[in-house]
Image (cartoon, rainbow, N blue to C red):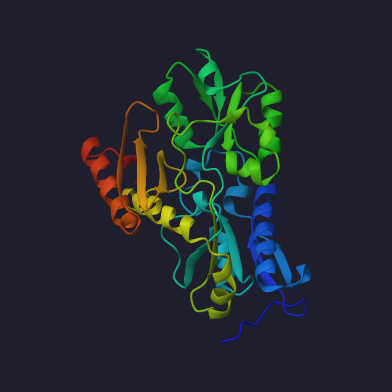
Length: 315
């Protein structure tokens, strides 16, 4: 069956948030589709959609709801036919999707680690007692306070440029960003370096881009198939199964990372209390094909170790 290639007269509409990173991810998706199908750039239209997480900048994310903060409005636009596909940072994606939508295309994953950013301090190991750390991530907050309860952690929202300005203004001594985002923006030099994942396990699916479509849109399915990265899908299947079993979201102190070597998948996971007072971590390994089952098994193991009520604050 022949695929109907997008044209300037009938452009493919790509939905995205409007941040510089979100746009870079949309442009990467467009470039890959152009290369896969020999289409012109004018055959694609990037449609910017403002989400709840983008509009509300004066409160911590956990105060305005934990799931779908950066996806809900984009998904509504796709269901209404305003856009054809949506490009998402996978760490922002809830594990449950609205009816009628499917997420089955991933681009090759970038560096999943966190980046240490500071104009004053060389690395995470050089933080002194009482230093102020800025982050809007509940995971990073919990991880830092668990490892270093002598630090002060303050709310730190905004895009890369905003956060760098806050550092220069002395709001905090350091912050964390995703290494993948800095790489995609051509700003890797902003980071002092990646934080070893042995010190700070990253967010579930960090560094991965997912492309969502309507479930009944077979044309989009055929157009996206050539740019899908199966290796990324294998790793995310395990990580997102782990998250789903914990009923977590991008705004919960849950971390996890799957890696594949010679057909064996290794999944590490961590759950923490928001104040960092308690944390549980473990890992599991097995065949790649069993990644989803391993994700669920690891989650149940950590919950069993943590005891009843450990994640009750999520409700």
